[in-house]
Length: 299
Image (cartoon, rainbow, N blue to C red):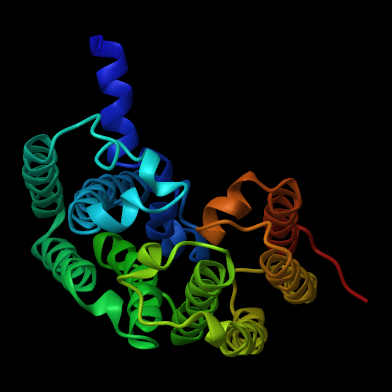
């Protein structure tokens, strides 16, 4: 294997494509309309880098612990550890390097950011080792880990989002975590591929109902957040911001429909990142926020 091929294999093993999830650390400065302030952006960017390294180390640990299950999985068996492209010793070395780099970057920002990264790593490690096997608890932890990225971004930049925004994020990611589990139990996978999951195949409809309920609950919280934001000085035309509520309902409903039709094969966020309708919805949401912030409009 050439150096270039080996580099690609390592990049695949640390799942660089998953780093897109860490853009959540930018949410606080985006919500506060401070993303174009250089100092705030650089701090958030450093927190993003720290989370990327931390997350990649937990992905590698997860692959080591799930090695037997991944080799029995029709898709995950192609992961570099599962198919033998990199050794377990190499994976442990990468984990040590990534953890060290993450802690160094976090410490350079602040002790609070370092504490946030350490807490994230501890929770992620516990989840990977054992907590992912406990039904319901596992999806709450997944939702919390996503929301934790937003909190870490707030700590790094000293810009703290409202409780409405954090509540919306928690419910939204709870819905996506349920969707991930629904896809796993609904697809026709070997029983060994679900060996470290606490769900039964017959529980698919129950998971579906809990996930959809969470998604629409998130929409209610989003509406309350929009109402709160309308009273702030951040928006010149707050009425326009209300368009983001039906847009969120449409996107979430379509995502669950795609899951029911088995179009979503694993991670819903990765599916959304490749889905042109989701991309259009994201651009539309950004346009709505921009117009409500800069365009003076009234009835």
